[in-house]
Length: 495
Ligand code: NAD
Image 1 (cartoon, rainbow, N blue to C red):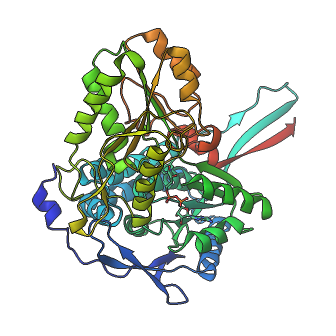
Image 2 (cartoon, helix red, strand yellow):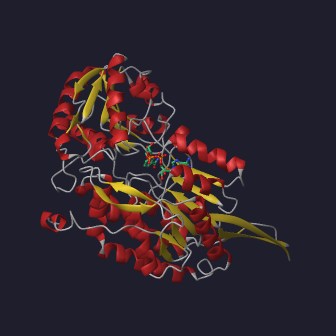
Image 3 (tube, rainbow, N blue to C red):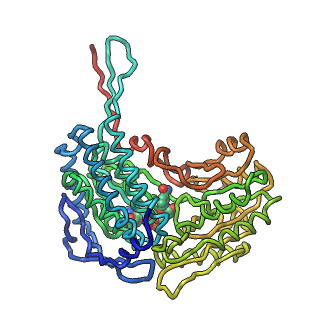
């Protein structure tokens, strides 16, 4: 168990200027330019990261290409790759608290959640794929006797992994685990506003024995580093988690360059549907509140639309507001905090603007709505509930990516299904009911990648994670994630 004094001992630990990782070497950008890293906890300068240029990115791509072509990693027996990756997971575990605190100082997630969802989940993910890789077989096709068809699984090549600010270690591990286990080389591009823990994670991979050039890290701006990766003729696959706007640019860049595959994990506007027959409505209210307000709503699968059956609407929303009021927002490094900081001032301003628009369009500000704790110098916002939200309101259609819940009543199951599916997104959702048949019907009818039943949040690495519609394509997590990182090759023999 972590105690508060261990966290406090690390809270002001100096962070040296950070490096790029290219071809096994830690280095500065060739231009010498750096970006300031500002803490969302208090607005203070934490350190600097290299402002990666096109040349730096190209160098990293070529290092990854060489590492792939000379087979220094993919040519190792899977059991040998597994050993190195398990050592990496052990090193991550030894550094777990350091990684968690470093990440929180950089991105603002509350430490209680960060410990589990960041290094905790990253370690489990790296171990999962390390353990799996020497159990992946090719296939023999069911052919006639005079021929033989073999299906080989081969590493794809150079993978560019582009990561957002929320949960950088967890989402980073969802890409790095299967990509590296399968034998690919990777160029990793962390978010401008949450790179520190990922850089450290990559350094530990080198320490664990990952050969030089197999994992490279280039920090810097999306429009420089990200664009160079997406337009490169030497990158074979892009795996991306982030906004729809960036996802669209990646698809365009792929079409304009080498038609590299793009797997996109994008945003959501997930419906959490509460039926009147729910067994424990207070529990449903508390879990639904956590499902939108933890990490100050910066969770791609957040249940940001509450659809509630009209007969229980008023009582349920009152109960939910009580739960929201009880959420402790504040110092992300305090173990008792339940919702930390908003990652950056631009996002905070965007959240507040959504609240204004919601009211201007006819929504009612039922709870919260304000920036708080300004005296800290950090970026904090109250859990916010907007009621009387109609299906076509902006707050019902657009992802806020902040602690803002839009509430809409529904009449019956058909109405709930229609409303749940009424956005361009399809990432996650929830259903609360005591009717088992209705739960199964809702799971079938909701057009999303994940449906939670009588809970919200928590699926682990054993199940796939991905969106439908404009929430993306392809899957992270589970053995299905390997599908992105292997090519299938057929060998056809005449016997
Ligand atoms: P973002 O799209 O702004 O940035 C994500 C990454 O893309 C960053 O590393 C950024 O530098 C890079 N990038 C920006 N412009 C680029 C360009 N032109 N070319 C290439 N790369 C570029 O997203 P964000 O604001 O960091 O993250 C929040 C978004 O991520 C939300 O929409 C959220 O829902 C989504 N998200 C989705 C999932 C999921 O699994 N579906 C998980 C977490 C977050």
